[in-house]
Image 1 (cartoon, rainbow, N blue to C red):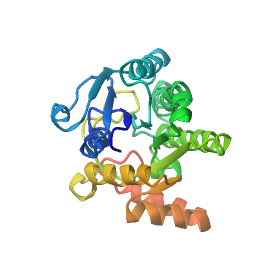
Image 2 (image 1 turned 180 degrees about the vertical axis):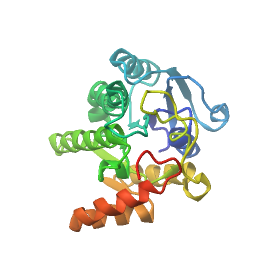
Image 3 (image 1 turned 60 degrees about the vertical axis):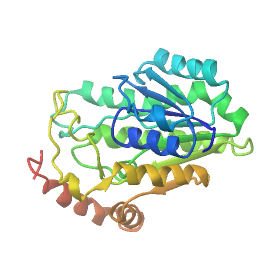
Length: 264
């Protein structure tokens, strides 16, 4: 990572904030992108250089400007981490369709927009294109229709980009954390699009965002194609390959046990 130019979207909190810190500690030049523009001021002390930008990845022009400003400042791009994302918690039967659109615009289209404008520079540097997906990109999670759909779409998109550029030196990593201690559930959208405001999970029992970031950065350095995190996540993906119908029932039962679950 030393002296690499790394763009991290959704960098103001959670996994994105941790990714920026880990990359900076390993000597990378960091470009921080988030809707709020907030960032950890400690990065200025540990990173060789920092560029902070307000960027809503659901807006194509914001994504284009993010890449253009990065090139203006640093001249090249080595790593793009598509991390920005939002979640939801509501039954599809009850949810306002605008909630689904909002998730697709951020989680899927945000990845597409940033990747489109960064790709020529990543090909020049033989760099890394990264998507922070989820176990929900392998197994549909009830109550998270828009979230699972966006992550399935992200993974399919990134696989195609990898295959199309198989002989051009481009590295594409699909990173799929399991349940992670972050604020994504606090800001998850309810059926009418309002943030639910509190997490239904015991965050203390989840993998810390810093640990997730360490795994992802190590996978970038080793140029891995994909990683699946947490024992629960790995078991879910493995069993779903061989026993999908049984896993439907298991996932239903697990999600139904959540406090204030939208279904029983």
